[in-house]
Image: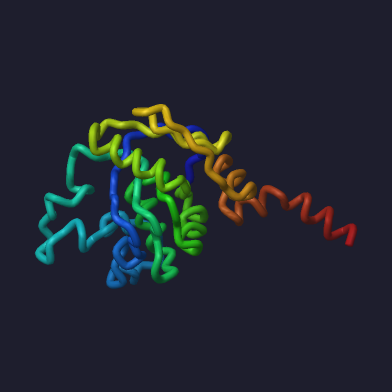
Amino acid sequence: MKQKFDIIKSTCVPLPLENIDTDQIIPARYLKATTREGFGDNLFRDWRFHSDGSKKEEFVLNNPLYKGEILVAGKNFGCGSSREHAAWAIADYGFRVVISSFFADIHKNNELNNFVLPVVVSEQFLSRLFKSIEKDAQTQVTVDVPNQTVTNEATGEQEHFEINGYKKYCLMNALDDIDFLLQNTDKIEQWEQRA
């Protein structure tokens, strides 16, 4: 379900690994479905579960200390293949924001198209955020979409993040590309009549 983005304040799930590719986010063997539902069950499947289906207790998503709507990941998140299913899995699991110092371009756009906000921060901000979360699992982060800022509430440190104006409008109004076009049908028809 599409939710409007405004100010999101949440605890975080830390995943301080670099070069997390889309096959790690959602393994290829789970790509058979054509609807977006149920992919969250297999998010980071091979890292979360043993081959017999039992949980790997050491993996962060299996640790009850860490929860929230924000995933904090290492540099170069979403590299590898361009599968949109990776963004489906992130969204279906319940993450609304992913913070990293760098995203693979196609994955970044896939997240935006699936109502997950990729927030790019400096490596220094990311490093200090990981330290805050390690020190206190209840550390909160505030992502202010209208003002395009992200704040580590443990330290008060804040950074500005970039987002395409069109995508920002769509997220803030819970519109996908089709919804946006439908919302502007009158304007499109007026323009066509002038042409």
